Each structure stands twice: as C-alpha cells, then as structure tokens.
Length: 614
Image (cartoon, rainbow, N blue to C red; front, side, top):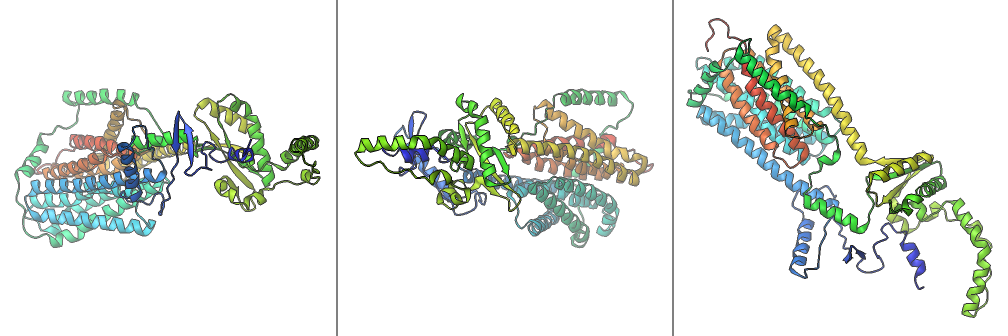
C-alpha cells in the first residue's frame, strides 16, 4: 500500500479525522463531506468590543452558503465568536441599564420637585461619582471590564439617594439654609454611606477580578457622589423649592402606613409573610455549576458542540495530568494509564487519547519494540529481497540501542502541534497533559479516575468541577460573612440608636429571607451571586430604616425613601433583564429584596416624639 508510513503518522496527529494532506483540510463525518477552514485573528481572543470584522466575515459566509446549494452547511465556532457575542451583549446592556436608570432617576426628580436645579445637581453628583469610579478602577486594574460597567450602571439607582434626600429636606424645610439642612442630614447620611460601602466592598472578598472591579467601582462611585452632595450642594443650591402634588401625597402617605404591633392586622400580615417564606425556602435549590454562568447565544453554543462532534476534538476542560522526575518517567506513566484504560477504549466507551507518548514512546517501550523486531527483521528483509529481485540488506546492529529522546523530538517542528501538552517546571520535575477523545459519559469518567489513582504521579483534572467547587466554597464563605456583616451592622446601629436599632435591621433581614423564598417559588437556583446580592441588600436596605430612625414621623424622610427606592428598583430591575446569568441572578435578588425592604421599613418605624410634626 502506497503512503502507509504517512497514514501511520497521521493517525497520531492531534486531530486524526482531518485529512491535513489535502488543501483545504477535509474530513468525513455524519454522512457528509466537510471542509475545514481556519481563521487567524490579529488581536487577543477576549479583546473585543462587540463590533469585530471576523464576526461579520463569518456571517457573510453563512449567507453565501444559504443562497447556494441547499446541501451546503456552515458551522462557525471558536473562542473569539463567544467573546464577541458577550461583548456585544454587554455593550447593549450597559447602554440600556445606564441610560434607562439615569432617565428614570431624572424623571422621578422632576415629578417630585418640578425644578431643573435638583435635576442638574443630582445629575452632577452621578456624573462625578461615575467618573471617579472609572478613574479609580482604571488606575488599580489597568483596564475596566465590560461586566464592571454593566454592573456599575446600576450604581445610578443607589448613588442618587443622597441628593434626593437633601432636596426633599430642602423642600420640606424652606426656613432652613442649605448648610443647616446638610448639618441636620449628615449623621444619618454618613451612617447610610458606611453600611452601603461596606456591603459593596464585601463583594471584593471573592478572588474574582471582575467582582473586585465591581466592588471598587461601586464603592468609589458611591463615596464620590456622597462627597459631591455634602460639599457642593450647599454652595450650588440657591433658591427655594415648592411643594409638588407628588411630594405632598408621598409625605402624607406615611401617616396612613400601619405599624407592627400585637394587633390582629399585624398578626395576619406576619402570618401571611410566614406562609410565603417557609414553603419558598423549602423549595430553594442550591446550584454552584459554573456552566450556569454561560451567557453565549444558544445558536453559538450548539455550533460549538457540532464542530467539536464533527472534528472529534477532546475537551480541554477535562484531562489527565501526568507528573514525573524525568521526561522518560512521564512517558512511561502515560503508557501505564493507556494500558489501564485499553479495555475502556476497546468497548467504545472512550474514543482514544492525545498524548506525548503517542509520538515519543518511553525508552523501555522502544527497547522492547526493538527486541520484538530483531528476530523478524532478517526474515522480512529476505522476503522483500525475493519479491523485488534485489540483494538482502544487512540489518542495522546499532538500531536496538538507539532511542528517540524527548529533547530530540522537542527540537522538531512537529512538536508545535502539541506544545501545550508538555510542561517543564524548571527543576521541579516534568509533566504532560493527556487529553481524551469521546469523553461524554459520567460512568466513563469514574473509570478514568479509578485508573489514574492506580498509577503514581497521575491526576484526573476536571476544570468544570474544580471551578464549580470554588464557587461553592465562596458561596459558603460569603454566607458566613453575610451573617458576620449583619452582626456588625447590628452593633453599629445599637451604638447609634440603642434599643430602637432593631427597627432598622429587621426589615432588611426579612426582605433578604423573602427574596430567597421568592427564588424558591420561581425555581431559580441559589448561587454565589445571589448571596453577593444579599450582602449588598444588607447595606442598601438598612439605609431606609436609618432614615426613618433619624427623623421619626417625618414624612419628608419617607418621601426621600420612596423616590430613592423607586430609582433603585428601576436600576436593579433592568439588571435583572441582563442575559448574563450572574448579573440576572444578582438583579433578581436585589429587585425582590429592595422591593420588600421598601414596603417593610415604614411598618417597623418608631412613633414620632411628642409634639413632632407629621
């Protein structure tokens, strides 16, 4: 047979299904003939802005195929396409959430005050807060991720609380000067700022660069907006604000809001809340699978799976890591693993391996193979000579003593196709990565783990399981930190308000439990980002109780809370519409939690001091 030597080496190639000798490369799969066209990008795979040229080129190819023969199919796959899709979606969401939140806040300010001055100054505080956040994040992290900007867009719904609270107090107290109003509000606003900043910074405890960026971005933005209100508003605010129909109605509505007590209505409301919370918590499912964070379009995911199935490419997320004190020991251990799994391959439960030892057998294996051929070589040479009518060549006596070493193989260009499979740890030993083809059954994974455990220096690595385990670890850690944070906030409130401090904390705790129960009713799994949202809710929700404790009976505080909570709900409500699963879970939890604490906070408000105006 002509070309048998080349075919022998082709079966050892990283992708044996592809006929690389042809131009372009081709393969046969699923009853069709396919042509493999590769593309090379000129920028990092994840460095995209959502408007890349290669995405457009691939779409043109699909349209051209659709206009041609009905039997032509185009399957486009690759990491850059997923990165482009994510960047494009993030750009869209950043604009929708950011501009949508800003428009909602400005509309609420206009309806409450019917004046351009509050709109301009509140907009100024948001602008300065966002600029400071972007600058600080860029200085610390060198670059700002798009997911940080998407999340930071919801900052608008929190940072405007300070400006709104100031102008509501100015509107309700026309006899006080702006500095006097600010001195009156400053203690409560400063306490509210500290709880919110601590909650945002708690997001940065998890060792994820994206989360740390979000934490820094939000904390810096909130502080900058607060300082703008405290130092600039009293200087720039001139003139009076008249009561509007909306502000008057909101101020008067607090007097009609019930208070919790031992009366029948309170017991019925608490009972209804318990009937919702307890069954909801019972239905909560915890899911830490990292694959739930996948946000690529379903069509692109399906195309990636189709390409992998057609090409028979192994998964880079699951592999065997083989370690050794010398290159030859690593090769020998690879061969031991392949021998242990030979039965699995023979039964068709595993398609095969991609290993360095396919190209460079260990020295002992090469010597054993040479010994097997010694007795047959002379006979084979004689038969070949008779067949071709030529002399019998002399055997190469030195051949059995010569072996192909790994350093010699690494010096050849063929190594480039497998360069990521060999790890030289600079004096700390050697290691190789063995990929497995056709690995799609959990039962097969168990067999591979058992075989790896029998060979010294061999470790089964499942990156998906490892990352999921990491998410679980930090979910549990953040749950404990959430409890510690609640205790810290309770102590801070007790220092400021004494026995009345529970009135500021209990609504937030009930809202947190309510939001988790709602996830159970909606069959949305509880994950790390839901717990992170609860940590933020602790800081944001307590603010409403603080404002009501600082100014008990004041309808103006309730007006500021309603306006601030409405804008926060709009901001995080838009975040709940995000197609990024992490942001969606975060937004869903915040949306329900902020809504619940908004409703519950006035229920727990204290009675106004004697003679205080309502």
